[in-house]
Image: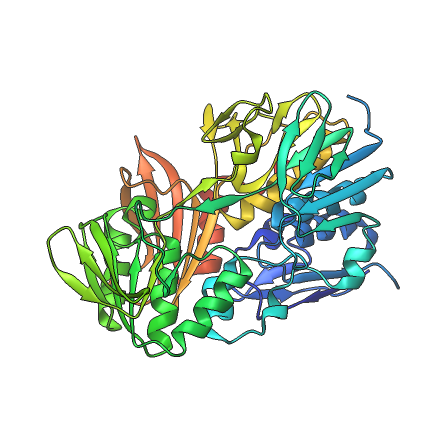
Length: 66
Length: 393
């Protein structure tokens, strides 16, 4: 799994950090998403998929190949 | 309920599309039909009053998914056909072309219809903003207009005023409330936001009603207030709120109140669900009926609706959350920051450009708000409200 984030679309809600804090964080100054791990392990798959699904900015893309 | 063979989703904006995706992700292999009144590929609405209106984004940037991602859903799309009726017992939906679609489960995701000023004349230059076409029409007009009057002091009114101001228009905002977002955010923060608009050159007429729109040769020329004052305008945006788009459900047998009334599982009737802005449901955590008009609710509720369609028994009990961006101000509101609550500063200073506050009622924290402090607001939410956005079973 590969994770891509679009900083321009991120609204700083932090829903992804609430769900998958091992994969996502937010910048201190403006709250924009920081990708901690672009290729997370299988134990994170469901949480990352749910993060992408609920992201209110539609800013997270998950590629299931590789 | 066992897993349905087919699912029909009516309305394919954030809530409807997320429900479809969640159904596939959670294992639905049967037929999936997505019916939408709009001819466009599904797009996101929050950018319409900001990036799209400002011209910072091409309209395509607001599209929710690529063509390839939509194809991967393996769904049948019916676009540009509004639903006109539902037979809840038969789970059949009729469209304006007479087409009849059926699902073992039906999901209602038809969203909102913007309110119009009562008795408003059909005048060119008066806009409501709900869809992509509305945004593009308004943008085209604003690039040529000089004086804009925004009617409405809610989220949309504030965002349109901010965007238009940045485009160089002379902007006046008129509203019934005492301050911008007073109803949503209460005294101190809404007063701070109102001051921010004034500092950036927006003229305010708050606590006053609109009497009528004036026009000449079919074009709007101004807005007359109940005080008698006439505000000259060559563009007017009406952002006085919306109503759930349930007109097509009259006679369906469903209970329609403030939206489609559902149980705590977002179920309106056997095999019928509602999701997003249109859905009113029993929030078990708050012990009352709730309907949320925000973007986060659309996708969070979709996860629960999809799970329940596939046989789960999950109550939907979210922590409400919305954000608004106006000028360089990013506001994040978690929980219920109601006007009646006591507001205390948790970080920063209300007179500075960054702060976070807590809303408390009867000694309990009910809401958290960040002003240019998105991360801090989220951390405060975790400390004071709960730890996860969706109560995943």
